[in-house]
Image 1 (cartoon, rainbow, N blue to C red):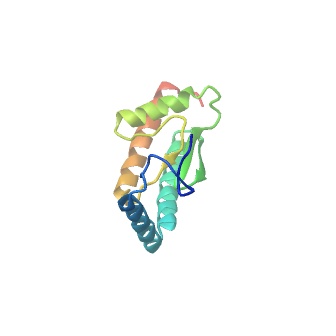
Image 2: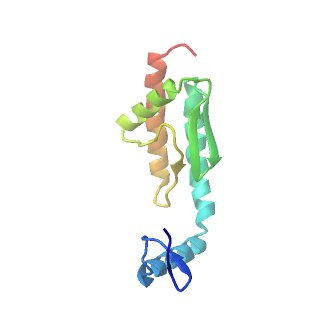
Length: 136
């Protein structure tokens, strides 16, 4: 059942408190000034391109789809998704948290060094998976 006050719908998120709404508006204004969509897409493209490159190095066809700032990863030619899950697990073991079957989000705090480290971990994980599965 929807709650209404003076014809205005609301949920339990903010309970009509001005402070969270003001904080949200301030964040949106800051994001506009930073041109955040452009920055997040640039960071996402740099990460995606790096992941694709190291995948190719080990014979994997990694697809990075969606907006670069909100991307989805999958290994092509892996109908069972088991290789993909194995690669993700190797990344997670090394400190890079990718999900196996969900989209990923780029954060403004992600630095070039973070991206380079992520790509290095992904490369090591691809190497491990290729060693276990030399066919391909």
